[in-house]
Amino acid sequence: MVINRHMLSKKDIKKLINEVPWLSEVYGTIDEAELIKVSDVLEIYRIMNDAALVKAMVNVNNSNVSLMYPTLLAANKYPSLVKHYPVVQVDEGAVKPIATGADVMRPGIRELIGSFKTGDVVLVKSPGGRIIAVTVSLYNSDEVINMSRGKVLKNIHHIDDEVWRLMSEVHEHK
Image (spheres, rainbow, N blue to C red):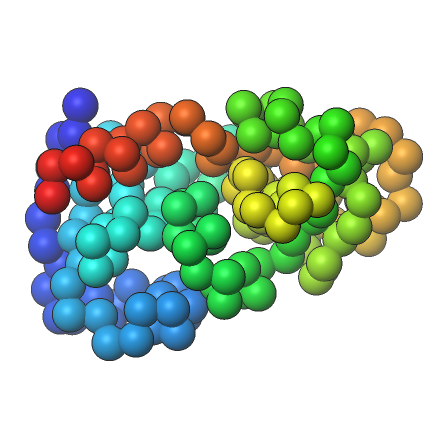
């Protein structure tokens, strides 16, 4: 399944940190990072033995967008990285469907923390405080606030999806 794995050079690590500022905040000095190229549209970055970051091509409103976002593992292990993303808190009834891959519908959202634009990565938090999904916004946060129904966030990473299963493999085959 995994196509290609290689360690990043110091120069590539520096470039990655510039692209994703929270990495150095969360991990301090990063000596080791591995790129796991799964396909042309999916890459996972392993930082200091954590499958921490995903780079994927995602279809947002009929156009393909390249996004970098934290894995659920990293988002739940390092709460400090969560403040780098807008977050929506959903009600208890929305948790199970979203955690298993459903998109986020407006009625399930209880709170918006931070603002976002269409195409931004948004983390989804359960009432208990766990990050249960990584999504991409289909609207600006101002529009979402004024909506009463409809799909507002596209689920791009959830429990037991392809990235989740690959993370488990990555941790087993260190």
